[in-house]
Length: 203
Length: 203
Image (cartoon, rainbow over all chains, first blue to last red; front, side, top):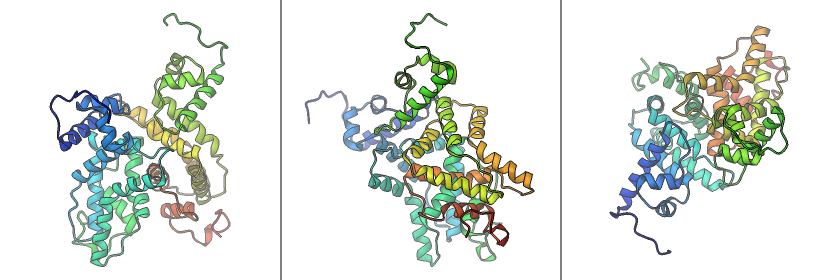
């Protein structure tokens, strides 16, 4: 690389850089003006060189995507409820809880800001999508292992994930009660007697 | 106001300013780097003072929302097909056609970028949402006038509008055929014999 002054007084470990940069992105996204954070602004707030950010993430979009997927994975521990219906309902309940918080709305906003621009390749978009869908994909895999027949990723995207995005975009709160069960029933059909006992909140 | 040099050589009419500013927003959003356009950049490209933009629209978010709703209203002439199912299917078909074009994806991106930041009031969000829903609302009103019982705006948002947003966000193309009919059937139930003859594409 080119010669560069050591502006980082105390050399940070890669994990420290990552944590500081992630926190800077979340802080900037949560600022009242809601501006789209630039890499120089993120670097300044995190106390790292902006070249470190470009080297590690390549682009702002990739960085935002990394922040979002990391936070979403941390905030949604995927408990095995014992059934596809239970797992999807728990996922939707976690999403309802998340978008009721300021940080949750910021994360959704970050996904939208990191969405593919016209310059992205199809492969980059597909990778972004699959990272976002990882938690849903493991719910599907558990269902297959149980002998259940889960809906396709695209159907889950359209019917279970999409509503959370548009509600954040337009600032429309989800219904106060029963929303996770409503979304899952649209996807899987109404619960039957067989579902009782394995579905949280189906009482 | 403060004294200001007349940088606009030829004074534009309000409608000319509006058209030039709208076109500048669309051009900047369609640029390969996909950056979020700033008001100074929009003003420069449109050849108007940025104070004119602030005076007329108040904020970048309000400007983006105006561009989006204007273009969407122009691109979706709401033909009365004679039934709620037909009208919603035609709306969904127009949306499929739209997101297959670069300009259509740019418009969805603009909606996401103009989405409420934490600084917006609930009233601003609600107005933004209602402007976006105006074409759907007139479909609902026609249905009520015919004696049909249309779904709520929230159900239409979740099941018919939301999928288009997430598909643009994640770059997932809609299915090649039958997607408008699929979305409308999820919303209204499968078509019956009574629907034949009034539903485009139901053959």
